[in-house]
Image 1 (cartoon, rainbow, N blue to C red):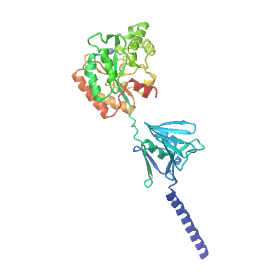
Image 2: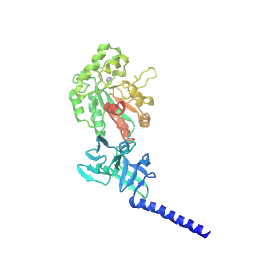
Image 3: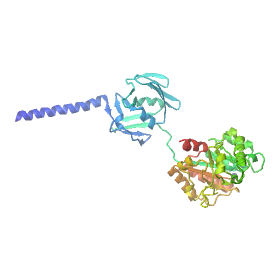
Image 4: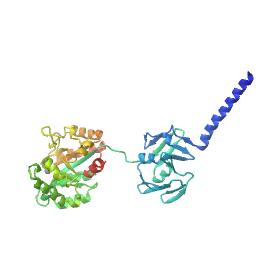
Amino acid sequence: MTGLIGRNVLLLILLFFLISSIKFDILLNTSFAADEVDIIIDGEEVKYDKDKFWVKDNNILMPLDFVKDNLDVEINNYESEYQIKKDDKKVFFYIGEKLYIINDEKKEKDFSPYITEDYNIIMPLNILEGLGIIIELDQAERKLKVYDEKEPERPGLITFVLDDGSKNQYEMLYPLFKEKEIPANWSPATVYLDELDDFATWEMIYNVYKNSKPRWEISSHSSSHPNLTNQSNERIRIEAEYSKRALSEFEPVSFVYPYYQYNDRVIEQVKEHYDLAYAGSINDDYNRPTGNNGANDIRNINSREYVKENPYEIKRVTLTGPHGNWNSLASHYNLERLVDKTKEKDGLLAFTLHKADENSVERLRELINYIKEVDVPVGTSYDVIDEILED
Ligand SMILES: [Zn+2]
């Protein structure tokens, strides 16, 4: 009897030593699969297959895919050479070699990157410190914290279309956009520039194009501002093509329909020269958005899908009319609702302004302040192309 107990005790003691030696080994070599470690990037936990990440001899080993999916870096490769770039900093590593080049400096490490059977490239995460990325492994808390400080993604996009190209827009609106450091899309009817008193001069257009920061878009509002739906196909072609030619050095990518009016014949000609076109607001009497207000209707926010399917029918909400007065439906409440919903739905909201007076400039200032406060980006048609059409 006693012999049996004695043997069991001996086994238990053996088992105890075995277990503690494993633990001891982990502590000594800091070598463990990090299946219970939270990965936090710029303060936010990221979901990731944690079995594919471990720590060995002070190297945090990660598949390159993790870096590609989660960090704001550019990755290039040529045969067994891999380059990871961020701004003007770069690191190189080579599959199967202990040589690393970190910002032009050769470094030898005790670990060689390799490719697993399922084609994961395993690399030491720590080398990214050469790119200014901070990596902290808190073993006590079991947290891997990475600070990449990548630009947070801001949902939604707002664009301002300044319709007609009037001198008033240059005098009243350009200074406010400049002060607030946001761009607009200035859209003149080209034959009136330098010709009519009310309209801007070519010099003003050049000045805005050259000096606006962020760069404004100069786009086409036709040559002579007719209602294109009443014109012959040939006349529509000339209006779209000649204005494009007149503005060619500004590389216009969008067209703004005069009087918000368009139909299939108009779209067909406009498509030949422009990537997108701005229409009007939802108008319950018609099938197409050709209305001149729309601030009270959140259907005037363009969803990403709508923009992709109807790039020549982008809905616009009008803020001021041809006399500079602020639109009666463009109340604080309605505008804030449009901006909030644009952010919530990650949509495109296009505002349009004709002339402005002192009151409307103040109202616009309040709107821009609100857009900045809730942090919705303001861009031009170039951003619509980059972030929606080509996304
Ligand atoms: Zn117009």
